[in-house]
Image (tube, rainbow, N blue to C red; front, side, top):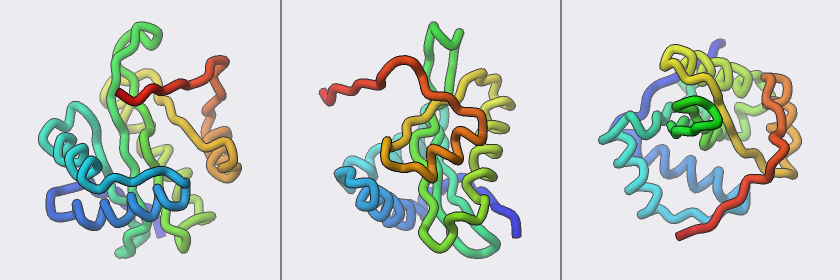
Length: 148
């Protein structure tokens, strides 16, 4: 059975928040539901910022992914950040991740975006393998963040 992708709508926000909580917990990331809700609503009100898709395997909700859109002189214009990709445990190791990456790449190509970036946990070897197999390469620079 193939992967199906559905652009997020308002009534699916509680389901997305539930999956985000699962994902953040598994990755030892802090989950702030009010802040996440605000960010999701900003995306739904301005699709030029990002797109969030639910991932289905048949009728079963398997996970979600988010693409955000940025601008960079280095990339000669807009680029996309594969911001989050989460597959629930029963749907892992079924080549869904590969289908998600291919779908995201197709979305970017259709939008004229020439670069797709992502970040992945150093300990997350399965995800790193998926991304390397899809052609992603580690940059020679470290990603650094300062919360403001």
